[in-house]
Length: 497
Ligand code: ADP
Picture 1: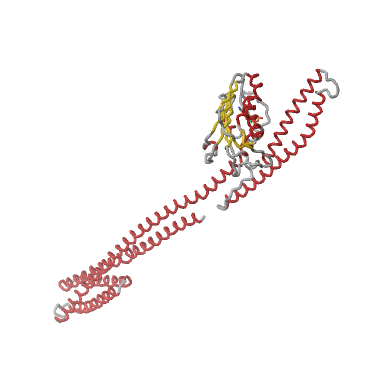
Picture 2: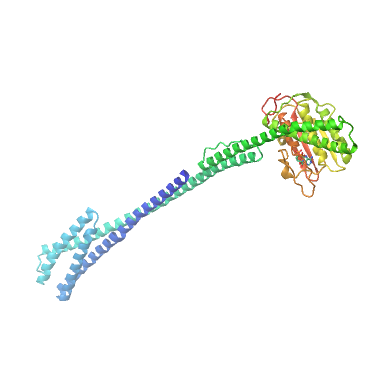
């Protein structure tokens, strides 16, 4: 608002200045047109009338023709009328003095002329009187010329003043317009930046919240409208966090409540299978095996849900020690061997002979490897390949941990399977993510495996990412620091380290 007011103020100054100058120029032009030009015309007319008076008087004296006398009297009347009109248009004391001189000399001349004309005798006037008459006549014309010269000078001066005002006004407008343009550009820049910077902040935070990082706040005090938007955003973010916590709490509670009866079902079922209540006919055994498998699956799902709830609440306990990753990977590969063989999927692994031990929770790391390998075998069609590589690794910008020093361990699990569409790659590590693939039958899963894997890797101070192309395959890579770290992690799930 202040910026726009400043521009309006500058415009008002330009307009006021232009109007002021135009007013002054109009006033001067009016004086020139209405007073000066008229006065000049009157002065010229007086010269003409006086000369005509003198000439006609002389002609009358020579010819004694009454017409000339009348003509001379009309010229005298014209002269007197002109001087009457001129008097109010005189602007300086010098001009008024000249006018008084003209009137005096004219009166002197006129009295002597009357006398001479009445007598009709050229010798009637004494030589002194004749001389005085001629001198008066000369004085009238001389003073009239002086008066005209004064007026001419005034017109020249006023025209010059007009020119001066005009060029000063143009310069002033040019300066003010230049200042206004610069001010408008600066104000537009400042105003736009003042809106864009907070908008960028809001957009960035919206992206953060949209990927599930709730409870984030935007600190914005101005401009007021955007500060209001930021406050609403913060409120929404808090509410989302609250809801997310409520949902996690609910899942955790329900899972917990389900586990005890399920454990009883499993236990009772295995007692029946073991023949604790007498021999089990083959037909019944088949059903009991189905119950056993289903309850094992359900138990895994419930355990995964509980694990994830604990990790998200920062309650998961880790027990860290220095361990070799190779046996963990080998154990994971062994776990999918039968399935891979059945599908005709080739398993290969590439580990260096010596690999430093890294600071990890062995069981949790096994869980990560098992999750990644079971996905690989699940989403890789018959006759394809799965490859596991582990080595010393230098983190890059893509890992989001390039500034960390020290040794790192990198593990990648690649498959030549169905791949993951690009639009899903950023969110498959979020819980309950399912991918709809065109033309590929859906493989039912819980959508928890990758989320648990990411939580565990983050708790190790590491990062996990995926590189994948549909129809070509996927490579999941995780990187963990070899040494124990003490700085805060993205997940606060670690209790031990
Ligand atoms: P799920 O239990 O559903 O497999 P995950 O969290 O382990 O849950 O995986 C999430 C989704 O990511 C899966 O539904 C699957 O579509 C996709 N995915 C995971 N690993 C692979 C892989 N190796 N190849 C193709 N898609 C995969």
